[in-house]
Length: 537
Image 1: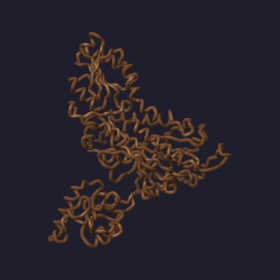
Image 2 (image 1 turned 60 degrees about the vertical axis):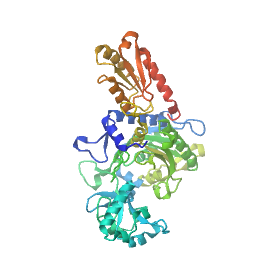
Image 3 (image 1 turned 45 degrees about the horizontal axis):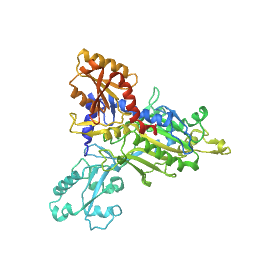
């Protein structure tokens, strides 16, 4: 069954997972707030990642645990760091503005549709000028536009533009669409292109580079001398502290430094809920190793990170691994093994996939750049290699915490018309915001009092919910929608024999257990359901 992203977004707001930021003022595009349940879900994923990377890091190829330490660096760093990293000079996207609508688009996210008949052997990219000379108008659409929308606008624009439409251009059904990025089309053809939100051609400006970093100022005066930036990634804070960690910690090559934190990018077109936003959180680890060992460690971390995402509940058929093409490589990866992505099939990308985590070979780009710009020696003197001095290479597993949270919600969203809620969230119990709900059958004191007592006992060990109001069916429905694995109901039989009803979220099966065994029951269930996480965490 195809899941509509609108339904997921609606549930997230209705049940307190994710809200638009500044909602009472109409929101702010690209920014989101995590509600009472969303922050719990996100923190659970964060904590599992931290445990898997820092607290109990995996066993390395030699059979011993690898070394990884943690870090929490400042969001605002010396602006010279961003010059050295290449972000000031090269962290930009080609942008075009629409003079009519005043909207701004990424040039590589607008596709111009070149039409040709199936028997036309011409290569579109190699013969764009030839195609543009044949027709006076071409249509541009934002990435991800539905085919039927493209077809409808094509008919409408062309039939209105040409009186002899049928004679000039044979019926559209006899042609094929070939989308070409606007950034790959010469600016001299802009006068022939109809923008995504306009009806007439020639409204798009020439592409210009737009830096994605947010500016700010440090100190009492605002000038170029006091200009600084909100970090666009967390990785640089690790590289800036590489020497501090070596000098203060008992780590030796190879080793890793892990960090979780917020990053900020002034995305021109934030979209797809929290998938692409202007404020987001990353979970990154920089693995420092000898240049000769990068391939071994690249493969190791790729396998480990896939295991992790599968362990937290992302199904195998919704995950894929894809190596970046040469035209996708970042400046730091061009001379190395490149980058491979772990991708997830989100509802808005289906049947395609969207990036969840990248495993990149950053080479020695960052440390070398910071050594040159700062004047600090960052080479490693390796006693295990006869005091060889070298600049470490880096393998970087970099995951989006916010994207990971979205993937968990999308994966858990399960339609079930047989239950009152019509849907439930099938979270892995280790990720579920609430592990259990305590539900007195009525709000009367004889039911509410023992329910409250049980809640107070369990909350010391588990994240549990005490839900007293509404009828029991509506409360079950609510717990299904927020993904609570188990519900314990206190009823009249509880008063007589000390037992409670346990309801399983997924099967809706019920059984009676002794109230003094509830904590033990949850421990066993959490242990059984967490089996798949042990390898990752």
